[in-house]
Image (tube, rainbow, N blue to C red; front, side, top):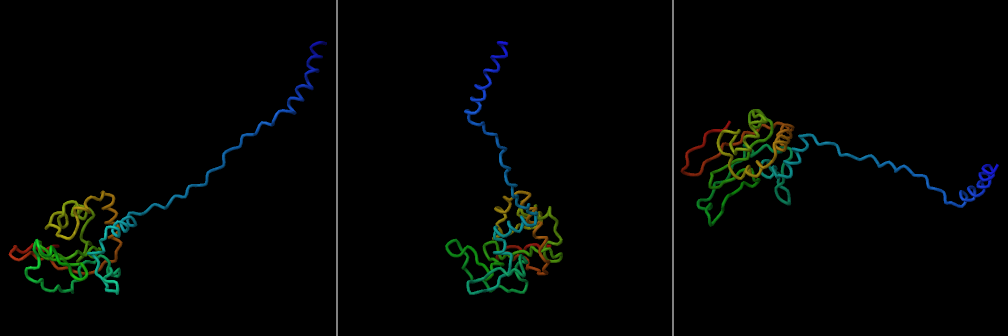
Length: 206
């Protein structure tokens, strides 16, 4: 009887304590984080287009159209090199010297004259007869890495900045190659380089 009485007598106390105690908050599940918005991966050709653009390849390798602000790349002939039909004016004698001009450029920057002779920017479109259509990816990469035409021919002449371009990773060069393959082929046979006066003629390029 005493045990039963004790248990019964505690019941009001427990009830009073429960009524006066603050309610324990129920743990809330953390809100779901919004789904991450991932940018679509670039294709190699898209990456190559970006690299070609920011590297300024159009400055020399694309013919120009002349507008009020000056020459602008002609994107209908993008990266097709020095126009075969354009003729350079004769270089004035004595204009190239350490204390004079280091180089002269044609009005659209697709041909250059310097101590190395006269160089014409290459057709980088995939035309088989006059552009990169007869090249392979390996030849292209070797040319950039070695500064040799097709990777084993004559030296690549100024102003082509191959010592800087060669700093690209293999993946970057492969991306550039992939983009160049997407260009419309443009038949444009650029002239062979002309050596400076007194130098032996250069071997024809392929």
